Image (cartoon, rainbow, N blue to C red; front, top):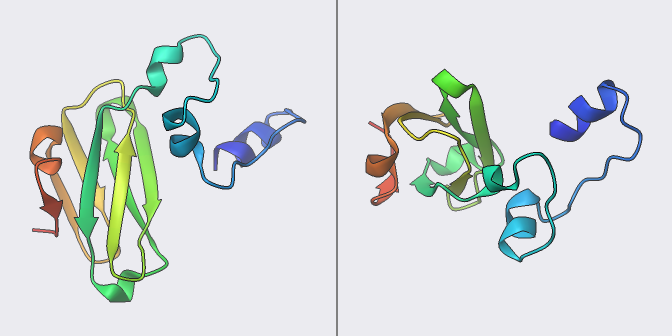
Length: 115
C-alpha cells in the first residue's frame, strides 16, 4: 500500500521487500529518514480468527493518530500484528470475523480471539 502511494506521488525508485518491512527492521537492516525512532516496535498482537478468514487480513488501527498495520491471516487462522505506532492507547483490531477495541496492553497479554 505504501509503495503504491509513493509511486502515485511521483517517486520512481520504489521496491517491495518480499518478507515485509518488519523483518527488515528486526534483522538490523538500515532505516533512514527524519525520525528513525518511529520504526521502534511498540507491541505485538497475536490473534486467531476462524479458518474461513484464511487469506484475508487482520488490521490494527489507532484512530487518533490515523496509524494502522495489517497482517495476513494464516491457514490455521493465526496472525501477528507488529505495531510501530507513535501512541499506543486504544487500538481497534479487525478481522473479517470480528472487531475489538482495547488498550494495547490488554491486546498484547494473550491471544486475541474476538469479543
